[in-house]
Length: 257
Ligand code: LCV
Image (cartoon, rainbow, N blue to C red):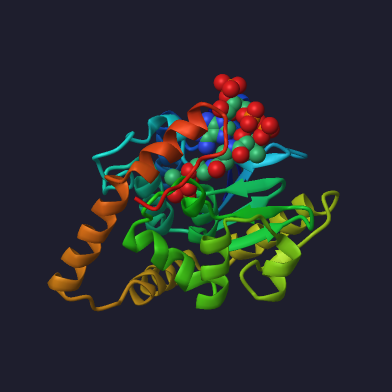
Protein backbone atom coordinates (compact mmCIF):
# COMPACT_ATOMS: atom_id res chain seq x y z
CA UNK A 1 0.00 0.00 0.00
CA UNK A 2 2.87 2.37 0.93
CA UNK A 3 6.63 2.48 1.37
CA UNK A 4 8.37 4.49 4.08
CA UNK A 5 11.88 5.83 4.55
CA UNK A 6 13.61 7.84 7.27
CA UNK A 7 16.77 9.82 6.44
CA UNK A 8 18.05 11.67 9.49
CA UNK A 9 15.11 13.62 10.89
CA UNK A 10 13.10 13.55 7.63
CA UNK A 11 10.58 10.79 7.02
CA UNK A 12 8.91 9.92 3.70
CA UNK A 13 5.64 8.07 3.11
CA UNK A 14 5.14 7.02 -0.53
CA UNK A 15 1.67 5.92 -1.63
CA UNK A 16 2.22 2.68 -3.50
CA UNK A 17 -1.07 1.10 -4.64
CA UNK A 18 -0.90 1.92 -8.35
CA UNK A 19 -3.46 -0.76 -9.30
CA UNK A 20 -6.18 1.26 -7.57
CA UNK A 21 -4.56 4.64 -8.32
CA UNK A 22 -3.64 5.04 -4.62
CA UNK A 23 -7.33 5.19 -3.66
CA UNK A 24 -7.61 6.02 0.05
CA UNK A 25 -8.91 2.61 1.10
CA UNK A 26 -9.11 1.65 4.77
CA UNK A 27 -6.02 -0.56 4.31
CA UNK A 28 -3.95 2.20 2.68
CA UNK A 29 -5.08 4.80 5.27
CA UNK A 30 -4.27 2.44 8.15
CA UNK A 31 -0.78 1.95 6.67
CA UNK A 32 -0.21 5.73 6.45
CA UNK A 33 -1.43 6.22 10.03
CA UNK A 34 0.85 3.42 11.29
CA UNK A 35 3.78 5.06 9.47
CA UNK A 36 3.02 8.43 11.08
CA UNK A 37 2.99 6.73 14.51
CA UNK A 38 6.39 5.19 13.77
CA UNK A 39 7.71 8.58 12.62
CA UNK A 40 6.59 10.03 15.97
CA UNK A 41 8.43 7.25 17.82
CA UNK A 42 11.53 7.95 15.69
CA UNK A 43 11.22 11.69 16.44
CA UNK A 44 10.95 12.62 12.77
CA UNK A 45 10.99 16.42 12.54
CA UNK A 46 9.53 16.80 9.05
CA UNK A 47 7.57 14.30 6.95
CA UNK A 48 7.01 14.14 3.19
CA UNK A 49 3.80 12.54 1.85
CA UNK A 50 4.18 11.59 -1.83
CA UNK A 51 3.46 9.05 -4.53
CA UNK A 52 6.03 7.35 -6.78
CA UNK A 53 8.12 9.67 -8.97
CA UNK A 54 6.50 10.35 -12.33
CA UNK A 55 3.08 9.00 -11.26
CA UNK A 56 0.09 10.02 -13.40
CA UNK A 57 -2.41 9.80 -10.51
CA UNK A 58 -1.19 10.89 -7.05
CA UNK A 59 -4.40 9.53 -5.49
CA UNK A 60 -7.89 8.84 -6.82
CA UNK A 61 -9.40 9.91 -3.49
CA UNK A 62 -11.73 7.97 -1.20
CA UNK A 63 -12.09 4.33 -2.17
CA UNK A 64 -15.58 4.55 -3.67
CA UNK A 65 -16.08 0.79 -3.27
CA UNK A 66 -15.91 1.36 0.50
CA UNK A 67 -18.63 4.03 0.52
CA UNK A 68 -22.12 3.03 1.70
CA UNK A 69 -24.64 2.76 -1.17
CA UNK A 70 -27.17 4.92 0.72
CA UNK A 71 -28.80 5.41 4.11
CA UNK A 72 -25.53 5.90 6.03
CA UNK A 73 -23.31 8.96 6.41
CA UNK A 74 -20.50 8.29 3.88
CA UNK A 75 -18.06 10.58 5.73
CA UNK A 76 -18.83 9.89 9.36
CA UNK A 77 -16.33 10.28 12.20
CA UNK A 78 -14.87 6.76 11.81
CA UNK A 79 -14.55 6.94 8.00
CA UNK A 80 -10.92 6.22 6.92
CA UNK A 81 -10.63 9.59 5.13
CA UNK A 82 -11.83 11.46 8.24
CA UNK A 83 -9.40 9.45 10.39
CA UNK A 84 -6.51 10.23 8.01
CA UNK A 85 -7.23 13.99 7.99
CA UNK A 86 -7.21 14.10 11.82
CA UNK A 87 -3.95 12.12 12.01
CA UNK A 88 -2.23 14.46 9.52
CA UNK A 89 -3.39 17.51 11.49
CA UNK A 90 -2.36 15.97 14.83
CA UNK A 91 1.03 14.68 13.67
CA UNK A 92 3.52 16.66 15.83
CA UNK A 93 5.80 17.76 12.97
CA UNK A 94 5.20 19.52 9.61
CA UNK A 95 4.10 17.37 6.68
CA UNK A 96 5.01 18.48 3.15
CA UNK A 97 2.77 17.08 0.40
CA UNK A 98 4.91 16.42 -2.70
CA UNK A 99 2.48 16.27 -5.61
CA UNK A 100 2.96 14.82 -9.08
CA UNK A 101 -0.01 13.75 -11.22
CA UNK A 102 -3.72 14.23 -10.58
CA UNK A 103 -5.35 14.46 -7.16
CA UNK A 104 -9.06 13.57 -6.76
CA UNK A 105 -11.80 14.00 -4.19
CA UNK A 106 -10.84 13.26 -0.61
CA UNK A 107 -7.17 13.19 -1.68
CA UNK A 108 -7.51 16.94 -2.41
CA UNK A 109 -8.55 17.47 1.19
CA UNK A 110 -5.73 15.18 2.32
CA UNK A 111 -3.21 17.38 0.49
CA UNK A 112 -4.78 20.59 1.82
CA UNK A 113 -4.63 19.15 5.36
CA UNK A 114 -0.85 18.80 5.03
CA UNK A 115 1.20 21.76 6.25
CA UNK A 116 2.92 22.68 2.99
CA UNK A 117 2.30 21.69 -0.63
CA UNK A 118 4.89 21.44 -3.42
CA UNK A 119 3.62 20.34 -6.84
CA UNK A 120 4.78 19.98 -10.42
CA UNK A 121 3.18 22.36 -12.95
CA UNK A 122 1.35 19.40 -14.52
CA UNK A 123 -0.29 18.39 -11.23
CA UNK A 124 -4.04 18.96 -10.93
CA UNK A 125 -6.61 18.95 -8.15
CA UNK A 126 -10.28 17.95 -8.58
CA UNK A 127 -12.68 18.14 -5.60
CA UNK A 128 -15.43 15.70 -6.56
CA UNK A 129 -18.34 15.48 -4.06
CA UNK A 130 -20.58 17.14 -6.67
CA UNK A 131 -19.54 14.47 -9.20
CA UNK A 132 -20.84 11.67 -6.98
CA UNK A 133 -23.64 13.49 -5.11
CA UNK A 134 -21.73 13.09 -1.84
CA UNK A 135 -22.71 15.39 1.07
CA UNK A 136 -19.24 16.43 2.18
CA UNK A 137 -18.87 16.81 5.95
CA UNK A 138 -18.49 20.02 7.96
CA UNK A 139 -14.86 19.63 9.10
CA UNK A 140 -13.93 18.53 5.57
CA UNK A 141 -15.35 21.72 4.06
CA UNK A 142 -13.47 23.70 6.71
CA UNK A 143 -10.22 22.17 5.40
CA UNK A 144 -11.01 23.69 2.00
CA UNK A 145 -12.10 27.00 3.53
CA UNK A 146 -8.91 27.27 5.60
CA UNK A 147 -6.77 26.69 2.50
CA UNK A 148 -8.58 28.70 -0.15
CA UNK A 149 -10.65 31.86 -0.59
CA UNK A 150 -14.33 30.89 -0.40
CA UNK A 151 -14.85 31.68 -4.10
CA UNK A 152 -12.04 29.27 -5.05
CA UNK A 153 -13.30 26.63 -2.60
CA UNK A 154 -16.75 26.96 -4.20
CA UNK A 155 -15.31 26.75 -7.73
CA UNK A 156 -13.41 23.58 -6.81
CA UNK A 157 -16.43 22.01 -5.09
CA UNK A 158 -19.20 23.13 -7.47
CA UNK A 159 -17.42 22.48 -10.79
CA UNK A 160 -15.61 19.28 -9.63
CA UNK A 161 -13.16 20.01 -12.45
CA UNK A 162 -9.36 19.49 -12.20
CA UNK A 163 -7.60 22.78 -11.43
CA UNK A 164 -3.91 23.07 -12.40
CA UNK A 165 -1.27 23.49 -9.71
CA UNK A 166 0.07 26.63 -11.38
CA UNK A 167 -3.29 28.38 -10.83
CA UNK A 168 -3.51 27.25 -7.20
CA UNK A 169 0.04 28.46 -6.58
CA UNK A 170 -0.86 31.92 -7.93
CA UNK A 171 -3.59 31.98 -5.28
CA UNK A 172 -1.27 30.87 -2.49
CA UNK A 173 -3.05 27.54 -2.00
CA UNK A 174 0.07 25.68 -3.11
CA UNK A 175 3.37 26.86 -1.59
CA UNK A 176 5.65 26.11 -4.56
CA UNK A 177 5.51 24.69 -8.06
CA UNK A 178 8.72 22.90 -9.14
CA UNK A 179 9.53 21.05 -12.35
CA UNK A 180 9.43 17.25 -12.19
CA UNK A 181 13.23 17.01 -12.38
CA UNK A 182 13.71 19.46 -9.51
CA UNK A 183 10.77 18.81 -7.18
CA UNK A 184 12.51 16.16 -5.08
CA UNK A 185 15.60 18.27 -4.42
CA UNK A 186 13.44 21.34 -3.72
CA UNK A 187 11.12 19.49 -1.32
CA UNK A 188 13.81 17.68 0.65
CA UNK A 189 15.89 20.86 0.92
CA UNK A 190 12.86 22.51 2.56
CA UNK A 191 12.25 19.44 4.73
CA UNK A 192 15.85 19.49 6.00
CA UNK A 193 15.60 23.22 6.72
CA UNK A 194 12.47 22.62 8.83
CA UNK A 195 14.07 19.59 10.52
CA UNK A 196 17.06 21.78 11.44
CA UNK A 197 14.89 24.20 13.39
CA UNK A 198 13.57 23.87 16.95
CA UNK A 199 11.12 20.90 16.95
CA UNK A 200 9.26 21.84 20.14
CA UNK A 201 8.55 25.38 18.92
CA UNK A 202 7.39 24.13 15.50
CA UNK A 203 5.26 21.34 16.97
CA UNK A 204 3.48 23.72 19.35
CA UNK A 205 2.96 26.35 16.61
CA UNK A 206 1.47 23.62 14.35
CA UNK A 207 -0.95 22.63 17.15
CA UNK A 208 -1.85 26.27 17.90
CA UNK A 209 -2.57 26.91 14.21
CA UNK A 210 -4.72 23.73 14.08
CA UNK A 211 -6.77 24.96 17.06
CA UNK A 212 -7.08 28.50 15.65
CA UNK A 213 -8.04 27.22 12.17
CA UNK A 214 -10.77 25.04 13.71
CA UNK A 215 -12.05 27.71 16.13
CA UNK A 216 -15.52 28.29 14.67
CA UNK A 217 -18.68 28.59 16.72
CA UNK A 218 -21.72 26.66 15.50
CA UNK A 219 -24.91 26.35 17.54
CA UNK A 220 -26.17 22.83 18.31
CA UNK A 221 -29.28 23.76 16.30
CA UNK A 222 -27.19 24.72 13.25
CA UNK A 223 -25.15 21.51 13.55
CA UNK A 224 -28.30 19.40 13.75
CA UNK A 225 -29.79 21.25 10.78
CA UNK A 226 -26.65 20.60 8.71
CA UNK A 227 -26.67 16.91 9.66
CA UNK A 228 -30.33 16.73 8.64
CA UNK A 229 -29.58 18.38 5.28
CA UNK A 230 -26.67 15.97 4.71
CA UNK A 231 -28.93 13.01 5.56
CA UNK A 232 -31.34 14.09 2.81
CA UNK A 233 -28.42 13.89 0.34
CA UNK A 234 -27.00 10.52 1.38
CA UNK A 235 -30.56 9.10 1.48
CA UNK A 236 -31.29 10.48 -2.01
CA UNK A 237 -31.63 8.55 -5.24
CA UNK A 238 -28.89 10.81 -6.63
CA UNK A 239 -26.38 9.58 -4.03
CA UNK A 240 -27.12 5.91 -4.76
CA UNK A 241 -26.98 6.68 -8.50
CA UNK A 242 -23.57 8.35 -8.04
CA UNK A 243 -22.10 5.29 -6.32
CA UNK A 244 -23.72 2.86 -8.79
CA UNK A 245 -22.54 4.86 -11.82
CA UNK A 246 -18.94 4.78 -10.53
CA UNK A 247 -19.10 1.01 -10.01
CA UNK A 248 -20.70 0.53 -13.45
CA UNK A 249 -18.05 2.84 -14.99
CA UNK A 250 -20.68 5.16 -16.53
CA UNK A 251 -21.71 8.83 -16.19
CA UNK A 252 -24.33 9.33 -13.46
CA UNK A 253 -27.78 10.80 -14.27
CA UNK A 254 -28.80 13.11 -11.39
CA UNK A 255 -32.53 13.92 -11.02
CA UNK A 256 -32.22 16.20 -8.00
CA UNK A 257 -34.00 13.81 -5.62
C1 LCV B 1 -11.91 2.97 -5.81
C2 LCV B 1 -10.82 3.37 -7.80
C3 LCV B 1 -10.92 4.77 -7.60
C4 LCV B 1 -11.55 5.22 -6.41
N1 LCV B 1 -12.04 4.28 -5.56
O1 LCV B 1 -7.56 4.38 -14.16
O2 LCV B 1 -14.59 13.88 -2.50
S1 LCV B 1 -15.73 12.96 -2.63
O3 LCV B 1 -16.88 13.37 -1.85
O4 LCV B 1 -16.07 12.70 -4.02
C5 LCV B 1 -15.13 11.45 -1.96
C6 LCV B 1 -16.22 10.56 -1.54
C7 LCV B 1 -14.17 10.85 -2.89
O5 LCV B 1 -12.97 11.03 -2.74
O6 LCV B 1 -14.66 10.07 -3.91
C8 LCV B 1 -13.70 9.56 -4.91
C9 LCV B 1 -13.43 10.70 -5.88
N2 LCV B 1 -12.51 10.22 -6.96
C10 LCV B 1 -12.82 10.28 -8.25
O7 LCV B 1 -13.89 10.75 -8.66
C11 LCV B 1 -11.78 9.73 -9.21
C12 LCV B 1 -12.27 8.37 -9.70
N3 LCV B 1 -11.24 7.75 -10.57
C13 LCV B 1 -11.04 8.20 -11.85
O8 LCV B 1 -11.65 9.16 -12.34
C14 LCV B 1 -9.97 7.47 -12.63
O9 LCV B 1 -9.74 6.21 -11.99
C15 LCV B 1 -8.66 8.26 -12.67
C16 LCV B 1 -8.85 9.52 -13.57
C17 LCV B 1 -8.24 8.68 -11.24
C18 LCV B 1 -7.55 7.35 -13.26
O10 LCV B 1 -8.02 6.85 -14.49
P1 LCV B 1 -7.25 5.61 -15.14
O11 LCV B 1 -7.89 5.38 -16.46
O12 LCV B 1 -5.79 5.83 -15.07
P2 LCV B 1 -8.93 3.57 -14.03
O13 LCV B 1 -10.09 4.49 -13.98
O14 LCV B 1 -8.94 2.47 -15.03
O15 LCV B 1 -8.78 2.95 -12.56
C19 LCV B 1 -7.86 1.91 -12.31
C20 LCV B 1 -8.46 1.08 -11.21
O16 LCV B 1 -8.56 1.88 -10.02
C21 LCV B 1 -9.89 1.91 -9.58
C22 LCV B 1 -10.73 1.67 -10.81
O17 LCV B 1 -12.00 1.17 -10.42
C23 LCV B 1 -9.89 0.64 -11.53
O18 LCV B 1 -10.08 -0.60 -10.88
P3 LCV B 1 -10.28 -1.94 -11.79
O19 LCV B 1 -8.98 -2.12 -12.51
O20 LCV B 1 -10.60 -3.00 -10.79
O21 LCV B 1 -11.42 -1.63 -12.74
N4 LCV B 1 -10.19 3.22 -8.97
C24 LCV B 1 -9.90 4.41 -9.50
N5 LCV B 1 -10.34 5.39 -8.69
N6 LCV B 1 -11.68 6.53 -6.12
N7 LCV B 1 -11.30 2.47 -6.92
